[in-house]
Image 1 (cartoon, rainbow, N blue to C red):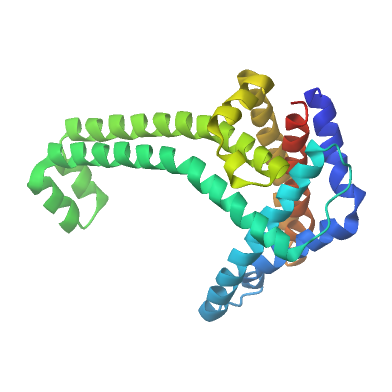
Image 2: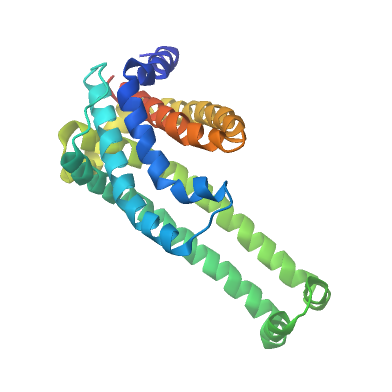
Length: 265
């Protein structure tokens, strides 16, 4: 399918079943209740902790449900899947595992480079510089005390870390996307981590085509997000509408698009 066909289909998709769109939206509302009630000036740490725990389970259910959206798209099934709470939870755990594993390697590499950059900076300023930073009462003291070459070392290190992070997370993002599609299609973690087949799928889709598709998809989601942000700015009711309709719409649109792209294989 051409990109235009995919996105046109995916934009219509959430409107095919308003009931399921709203059920998904209610889950997003529950997850974000602490943020919603904060709009009314009410804050409660104990309540926030409770909803943080609840949100973990609800997010897993949402992950599992959206995996079903990808599965239906791969099968060219236009229906929004039913909520099957137990299956959604199990699928959501699998979804989380796939994302965690695929992003683990770039996270470790970026962390090592970041730590090395900081170590080089602290090595350049020595113990005196470290004590100065620890005891400084203002940023002016730090800026005037640390030599320019040390700041240059830090800036270079952070720039390298950022560049490597962007490259690695983009590459492994491609693997994760295809891995999730394989998980949706075959419903086993083994197939999601069948790296040779994941690479073959990426080649069959086309690396540049997949990369370009994801960039356009993210841009469209960002535009939708800005619209939702404007709606959410409406006092009190706006934030509820944003979570109830906006988040669920983007979730359905995004995963439908990904599944349709993979359906060409």
